[in-house]
Each structure stands twice: as structure tokens, then as C-alpha cells.
Image 1 (cartoon, rainbow, N blue to C red):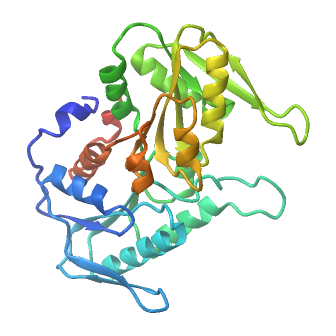
Image 2 (image 1 turned 120 degrees about the vertical axis):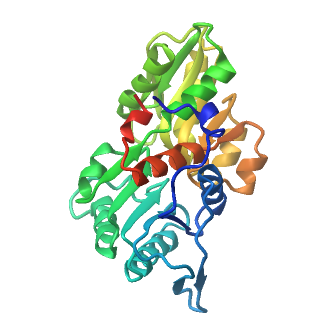
Length: 329
């Protein structure tokens, strides 16, 4: 049965006697929410730093022969959180855990998935190598920026999708009036937009951004019919917010009634929150794959959806060797 966020929170606890949940420091509230969903306490341990910021990890429970899931997003500060994840994996490996799954709701470095020019790295592949060599047996992540990153790993890697959670929220907030258009903010996100549009039975449109001449601002050309429609922009990552803001402006200029956005990973660096607040976006909905800052929580037009039930269900199914892909179909 496809995942239903409304029903999941009321389900009873799983058979998880040999499962351990370990939380890193990147997003403790999400780890606690997953723990509550599974009715399984977080494993006791400590992650601390020495004076020179070296990371020290100590697992304070027996994990020998256990199926261990480490919950750690590699978001800001990306390098610190990545190193913490690697050391947690090493600590568990040396403690004789039976299987170690790195649960990475937000996979940092995913935007560096190819060589954009000569003498540049493919950092996503390097990170995949590091996680494997540290001792992870499998990876569970959410809405990878590029699907081919799954192939960077030589261990089983499950890429979850936030689309079911977003679909339920859209149905709850927008109803079924037939006036919704799902919009990709760029050509590269068409597959993602089409998948969501199919779920809610809506048409799609595309914002094609291009720079006419060097030094001039980008021009957004809208491909598709948006006049008189409520537009929902869909993407995996929002960082500076510039593309979203420009896309919303272009949609409204082309006759859209309103423009909102659903984004999985709210990086929102620098002045992005202020940019979103001062834009013509009616709302920006993100998930808690990255710990929301105080500025995000205070923003009037930014809302956060929890993906804890989705990840919790995936962990439960993985531990029972059941299908994870059936959550989405």
C-alpha cells in the first residue's frame, strides 16, 4: 500500500527488538520524531568535540549483532556533520554491529555529481566512497539531487521520495478544484514535476530561464498554460531562493492567480529567508530533512512538513527485509 502520512502516525509499534537508532547532532528533533514513530528509544551515546574541534564518539549501549540505523543529515556545517557521520559508522563497526545503515535525509555534496569543467572534482562520488570505506552496509536517503548518485555507491542505496507527503499536504490545502498547475522552476526538474503532477492529476508547466546577454538579469519564459491557475513550483533543493522568486514573478506576470512552492530540502543559506519573505510567493513548504533555523520557523510564508513518518516507515521495512519502493507506488 502506498505511504499515507495521515495514517502512518497512528500505527502501532514495529517488531524492532534487534534494531538500534543512533542520532547524530545535525538534526536531533528529526531523529527524536523518527524514534517516536517507531516507538524505539534512541541509543545512548555521546558525540562531543575537543578544544581543537576534533570529534569524539562513544556508543554507551551494547550494539553487538544489532541492526543499527544512524540518522544524520550532512547539512550545514556540511564538513563537520559528514565527519561526525563517518566516525559514528566507524565506532559502530568496531562495536560489532551486524548491519549499519546510514540514514541521510539530506545528502550534502549531491550538487557536485558531475564534472562541470576541466580539473574539477566529482565530490558526490568521493563522499560515497568515504561512507562505504567507513563501514556502512547500506544507505537510506531522501530526494537525491541527481538519481545517478545511487550508482556512486557499491552498497544498497534507497532513495526515498517526499512526493507522497507533499501530495497529501496539497490535497489537504488545495482541494480538487482543477485549477492547479505543477511547475518545474527549470528544465532539469521536469521529471520531478511530472511525477507530482501525475499523483494529483494536474497539468505541468516549465520555467525556462536564460540570460540573453552577459551581465543582464535572467529572463524567465513560461512554457505551458498558467493563466488563471494556482501554480505549485516543485524542486528538490532551495538554497539562495533566487530561482524560485524569479519563477514566481514570471508565473504571476503570465496570469497565474498565485504561486507557491514545495521543496524537499530547505538549505536557505545567506539572505534566502528574507528573499522568500519579501517575494510574491504565497508560501514555501519544505520538509525537516534539514533542521529549520529560527528564521525559517519565524517566517510567515514558510511552512515545514515532517518526513519522520516516511523515514520511520522505511527504516521499519528495511529492518524487516520488506519492500521500501512499495511506499511510493
